[in-house]
Length: 123
Image (cartoon, rainbow, N blue to C red; front, top):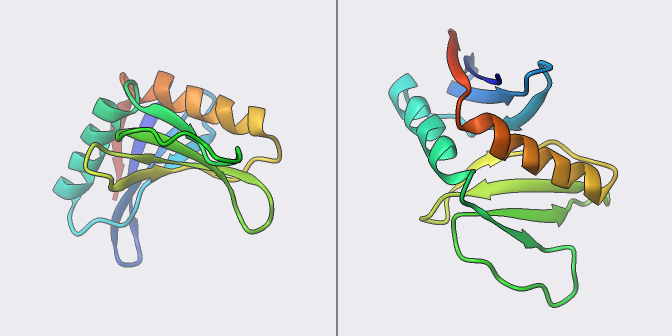
């Protein structure tokens, strides 16, 4: 089972989603309160399993409605993803991956771990 780890950043609470092996597979924005952070976790749990995949690395890619995972290349040429909620707001971002398959595996891990991960506060 994965874990949502709520921790205090410099300007407010945020969370990381860790896979069963302890590796961070997704990171949130900074929130104004712990309650808002927990709402962000609930949004990831709700949206990740049903989110479509929009592969922005393809030329003339097909737009996918929200909620969705956007797979894209960053300025360094590495693959990344972000999860957008139904309202289009980014609720989780992934780290960079050298390969597209690695990035897709990260998305699959988010889908798998988000639903039943426990929430741990490390404030």
